[in-house]
Every structure is written in structure tokens, then in C-alpha cells.
Image (cartoon, rainbow, N blue to C red):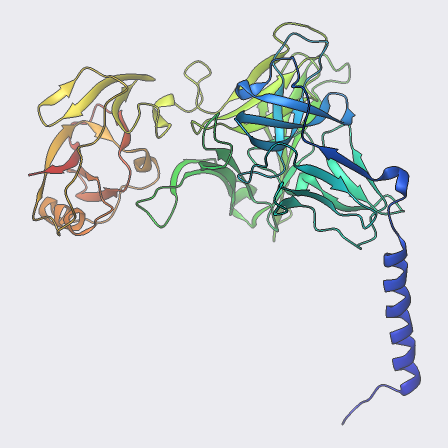
Length: 442
């Protein structure tokens, strides 16, 4: 049996499509709502995060302001600043638009009648844009929660900054299985481009990863307890601030979550500040830690408080020794302190200059050897013992043949072998059968 669409029905469909397209095309931004800001003029006088220089734009709502800022000369980021100038406290950056693609002096931010918000550099190259030209946008708003939105005539969001997190989540912002699934650190205070650390959702867990140049897969260094009672996977994870009691004497900073393929939902409490914590940010730091900063606008000094640290020596959470680079590229950590520098001559006093040996060109192990560090584990050992069982000599061969292997960790009681593409912080343990073998030139 075959079916066909009548000519009259086809005409009706074409008319509907035409008028819908015409409607969107006619929904343009009023001239009074358009703008063009040039990155020029005097810098602001207040102290901001990263020691940056900044220029304020006329787009603000308490306590957020859109700015151009730079940490190196003539390389500017369009960022969202959090904090008020009446306060003597530092102001923090909650979101970057053109992450990793800085613009120069005299670059322009334009919101035109077509509804596109666009930031071209001085040579005309587009560093960043919302991609909303001719999509029914009629206005731009910076909402009280820090969400920068472009909306249509009915107030529906055509585009929102909450869908494009960088290293930070604001209260009300979410990670979702359909994206975004994670936030990623800066490289450093000076370099705002995408760094190696990330926090996000994976199956029924919250996870943190370190990207390594020596490994195709990122390296896991934190995994939460399981969500959802063993069923489904995380669908939505919303960072929220809610009163703990009806009197609102204290607040809870938490994740509200729900699951895919499971009726499970619930909350995951992170911190309990004794004041309104609505103005909080959850941030992956450039050292790999996960922190919450809470802004209390009723004080001038010390308005920011660290209300949560995932890796914290004082709060009974994860040990700081589990931070991959707590002790640099090679150091022994015990009781949250960097205590020794491994070497072929034994353990030496710790210094920030501790580093793995420089290796010769990779030749399948012919020109390398190993030295032992007894009673230590790798941060990956918290989630896997490694491969095996296998003999120590076979574990060594695996590392010999792997040019990305800087050493291996061997557990004598289970004969398990873990290759390490990064050495970093070695965690001191009481079990002397857990041994690290650090690759070195012969």
C-alpha cells in the first residue's frame, strides 16, 4: 500500500513553514536594546581575582557585572565578575565567555538587531559568539542568579550562559546527562584556558579527572559514593542553596539530583553555612581541588568564605595527599604534608624542585632502569589495584615497552601491577609490600 500527500495539504504545510520563518525573522531586537562596547579606557580600581586588570561594562545586576579583564598584557577575556564595589573584599570571576581565545585592546562586544551577541577581535576574527542570529531574540538580560540570557518576545531563553559553564557553577546552575556534563579548571591564575582537571557526572557517580599528555584516557582521582541505589544513572545535578529550617537560621549548599531509568532522586549536602548562601560558586581550582566560595554581602572585609573543600586536612573529607600534584611532579605525602623527595639514593628532604628523572629516548627498556620507593601508593590506587596477577618482571616489561609509562606500582600480596603515566604525589601507606618503581636512565 502506498500513501501520498494531497497538493492542498502540501500547500498548507509550506504556508505554515513560511509564516513561522517570517515570524522569527520579524522578531528583531529593538534599536534601544542593541549595543556596542569597545574594550578601551581606564581600568577599574578594585581588587579582583587573579590580580587582573579589568574594564566594567554597563551590563550588571547585584552582585554581578560583565567586564573585560586580563592577566597578561593585551589579552582580554569577557568575564562575569561577582562582588560589589562598596566592599573591600576581592571580587571573583564566575564565568568566561571567550575562554582560551583572548582579544586585544579595542576589540568590540556587539549585540545587533539580528539577536547575535558577538565578540570579534580587532582583526575581525570572531573570538566568541552566541550563534543566535535570526532566531527570534529580542533582548538580553543578566539575571540576579548570574545567568546571562538572550530571550524571545515571550521571555523564553534562546541562549543562556548557564548552558556553557567553564570552571564554575553558580547556585541554580546544573550539570545534565545531555550536557553540559562537567566543569573544567583553568590552567593557572595567569592562563585562563582549559586546564587538566575536571569535575562532573559519570554514570551513578560524581568524578574528578586529571588529563595527562602520557595517557589517552584521563586519570581518575576522585569518585563519590554511588547515587540512585544501584539503579539508573545521573540525569540532572543542580547546585542549590536552601534554608535548613523554616526560620532560615542556616542554609544548606547541596546538589539536587534525579536519575535516568530510575525513580530515584534526592540531595547531596556539601556545606551548612550559618547565613544566606545564595551567592555561592562551586569551582574546580587550578590545583585540582573542588571548593565552594560563599559571598556574604553584609560585611566589607572578608566577604568571601570557603564553605567547602573536597580535599581538606581539617574537615575529615578527602586527604590532601590524594590531590595529584599536592607534592608536585614527584613527592611523598603523609598526613596532608609533603615529607620527602624520592631519588635513586633514597628519600631526600622535600622541596618544590622534586621531579622525576629525565628519561632518554624510548627504546623498549634497553636504556632505562628503576629505583624503588617502599610503602607508597599512586592516586589511581584508590580506584584500581591495576592489572594481574602477574610477576614483578612482567610488570616491569609492560612499563619498559610503554613510552608513556614513568613508573609502576606493584602490590606484592596480590601481584597486581599499575602503570603510571603520571607520578606526581606518592601517598605514604603503612604496608611495605606496596612498592613504587620509578623509571630512570641506566
